[in-house]
Image (tube, rainbow, N blue to C red; front, side, top):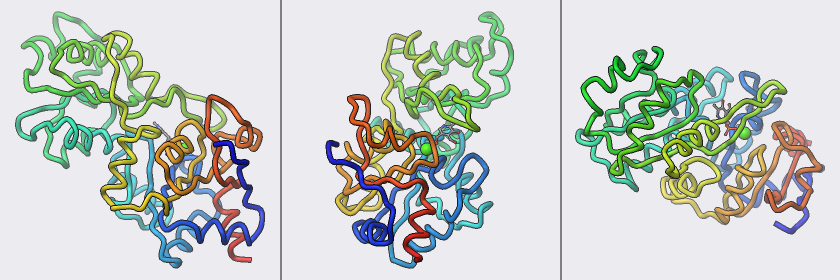
Length: 307
Ligand code: PLP
Ligand code: CA
């Protein structure tokens, strides 16, 4: 956007911000917590929204955990969240397979490159998946002995979902490529993030692995996480949301803020507790969109509101 972002620095702006929206979509890491450490006043902020009759929805690009595992993560911080309030890029990918590609449970199977968060969501929808965390993929690749090649490829596989795998190896890439070489097999990517930050370091993100498969296969994946509109459309229809009354809250300009602006949500809030700085929030650049509001951290808005 070209409008200068508003920094939330006093009670009046904080109240105005909270009054404008009915639904808040929260990115998780960098906004609510950093890894396993809850940011200050996250719980109080969420409780305040509940008291004000607002709706909270959690939208994460992390495909490695299922929504059920996310509810447990919230519970470990003393925050009660329903599974229905959570959207991971793995869940969004499973919905894409069901509602857009229209794969049939019991007939079509999905080959997974990634962790258990993807297969768990597929299984909940009745889909059988292959690959993923199968321990037989952990062995060194040998084309003559791989159990995934010995009896040929599984003819029932009609889609590949690829996401971040902390145990990426050549065997997994090699078998996934065999499925992608089949024209009938759809190619779905959980999220395009090239990197993600953790403890002051920058690590390879899902996109760095999915794009390796895109390169070797010469194909383009349909990405389902932020900032892709597949994710937003799923959420809007699940809750029948009025987009003009929604605000996207995130820590990343090129995914979270882009998601909110391109999705034509009523507002966007950037928090600086994750990966962006105030200079970046204010900088006009071809490479990112600016937020409507920004704050150092979510808890600051709670503290100003409470004054
Ligand atoms: N992908 C992985 C594997 C992660 O661990 C994280 C953060 O924990 C993310 C993506 C980014 O998640 P979010 O969209 O909640 O910031
Ligand atoms: Ca984030």
